[in-house]
Amino acid sequence: MAPAPLASTTAATVPPTTVAPEPGQLQVAVRPWGEVSVDGRVIGTTPLDRITLAAGTHVVRVRHPLYEVWERPVSIRPGETAKMVVDLPTQGVRKQP
Image (tube, rainbow, N blue to C red):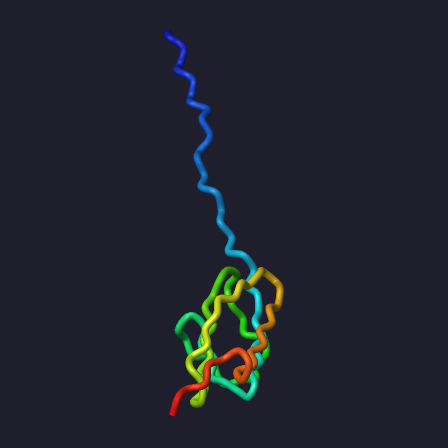
């Protein structure tokens, strides 16, 4: 009687687990005030305290009736709070009448 073939001992391939990084937060203050959108989604009117966002780069847009739209990227780090202060009279462009 021939010996039984040995079973293959190759380990099963398990894909690595990808865990989404912890979100971060963004605080936004605008003088005199502004409507804030992040990545095209309206968040609300300032002051805004601690908007929870996924880690990474986001585009923040501020609208005010007397100024052109103000837009900047912001980098959010996991577990941290980024702060954005916008002074429209000095940083913004006033709309022409």
